Image 1 (cartoon, rainbow, N blue to C red):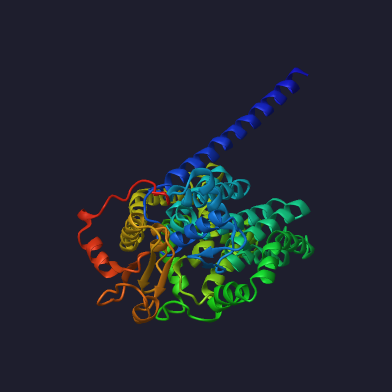
Image 2 (spheres, rainbow, N blue to C red):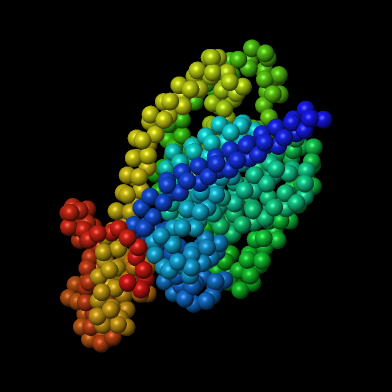
Length: 509
């Protein structure tokens, strides 16, 4: 009896130790995620186009108290689903309006994605694999920028898509987990539209061909679809009923169907643009090819069929996830490089599995184990350079928005001196200009600005050039506050003369 009790005590202590270790590992993942994704989180300006656009939509929703009828610059906004705007508006209400509070929801979603990757990998490839799966995304520029650091719809999309796969992996035979997976798909849909359907497509493929999932049957997919419909359906029905035909024309037509069927951006980019971009993002993982080759050769010695049969079902699920998301990025003809971001998440899991399997059961002296250690060492040596590149690219993106930010601050100062004016800009919309000026801005062509909008002004400038910013004050006097091209030259040619841009920026400043 004493020996049995000792064994039981030892088992409980061992289980508690494992639980504590996993808690500490999750805490480490959270800490690394926070440190990586909050770099310069307070720095202004919010970036054109997306950051400043989304912050302005949240600002207008918060102040108009109309969270279902979103607007930007005073006009209806039906280009994106509402979830990010609700999150940012909530952050604004809790913390006050600033760059930090605008970006904080994305940071939370990004850190949450890292934790989900750890939890996905842990039961399949062990603790080392879980830590690697959670750390590898921090070496991807588009995950750091779009998936966690910037105010963008990609961060909640990636988090809820990953949660959908996690719930699917936890309980393909259990309706509760399937419903949770479907609900996560629904939240992904109201984060970034039909891209949120990708986990459902992955699940459908898994229920057809992957052992451990195929036995469940397609009835499980119905539970997932029901969860997605219940979650995303009410918003879609509301928009279709009350914003029709704007909802169909903009969100369904332009933002979804035309991105697949038409070149909406640069038509000079080739059909293989998504694959080239994906290859550029993951090429720093090349050292992992060394242990992968050793594992492949070792597995093939026993025969191809036995080697494939030893691969766990979750690995096949991750591979299907990668194929579906990468195929979707290639199918979209709109050449935006961050469309490959969903494919980077299963890539991190598969990349982590290689050294985890090579080092399994302490096989350090085996060829695959030695090569795995060498691969991890090479990646660690290259990591600081990769991190500098990511931060430099982020700083460059922010610098591109500085000219419109400087113009916006001039407009804010002029309006504070003589409130009630109206802004006009001779050019395409600049969201940073709208957000930081705190004013509605009319974006028009130069000819229209001169002959239509300013008719009746008491004083009109002699010549209005392209990219001029004009303030029409309450007395009817029109004055040119600045020119974007001149600000661009001044900002980028004389950086030492720039005003400081660190620290939070409140709309009330």
